[in-house]
Length: 418
Image 1 (cartoon, one colour):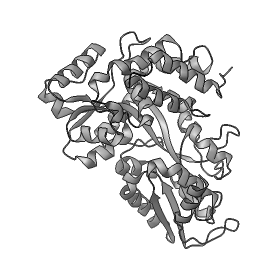
Image 2: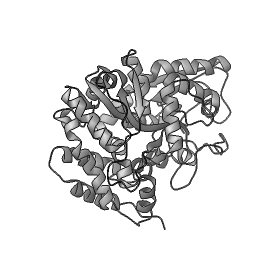
Image 3: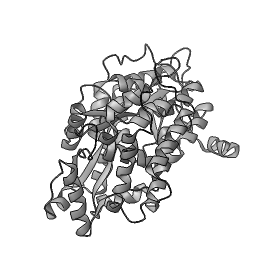
Image 4: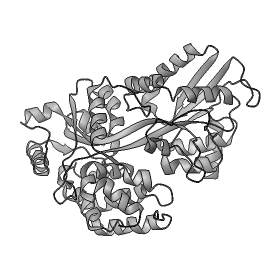
């Protein structure tokens, strides 16, 4: 690891900056902004051009790195002199190591997020000190995308009951179309798949209350049954699904070889770029039989935020930039150009699918449980469940064993709230 860190440090890009953190920045400053969203580079450059026009003398140098390599690159960059001024950081539990390393400046008093969704603001706060360390960027939702043309060609409409959902899958498979585009090789996607297909089966928000207060555990029969939902839907997934990558699943959907894609609102812009002719819709997956509540839900969580590096030599200008990121102007630009649900309140959505996702979440929200509540220690809930679902799909473990492993894993650090 040490050699990797040195190599990354050596290749970490530097940017020309001027000004000092203590006395304020000079009028001519270039702010280096880092992100893991390589697919959004053009959109962010357009967005920051708006800021540059409003702030003569300030330039924003936006750089994006590969998602799977970003955490290590950022850790290295924030520890040295060649890192970013403003960094896109992870949320909830994944943000805590960055805070603990004192790599970010507290933003209390810099930005006012008092009118924001409390769950969104929680994602950017220190668990120990309660201080705000970043401005949340997006609020993601999880739901089912579907190909409208393939549905119409096969006489299908979005299902409203579990029986209808199973019938849709059967009809598509009989027609030689993969019903569900799933890439189980990338384990990080599988807890999201679980939320899309089975959140009502384990009890959604009610189960969150019970499991975080210690009233229930992940060995609860409803939770075990929710993992089994994925096991039973394996025939609707691509063959040898654990060997199929996430990017392969995306291509299956955008190329019309698969009819449905269980995924996040963050997929929308990418899908539209990959195949502008693709006619997409979204729907909430109906509650599986036996669910504590038969109402469908839409999962939501805050995703990513922008914080100021404690080592930036342009802290005044950097704070000004993240303060702008808390405005409705920035939020609207993110909605329009990045095609994401903004974390900023009051943003409107011209894209009908984004508007529908937001409406579905507002009507029947549930949290992405393992991300929001069980990523504050090691092993994280998403990590254990992701690899566990892989083993279920390979026939190596039962849903009951995977659920027991999840409970054992998070119990190493998680203490129920009183």
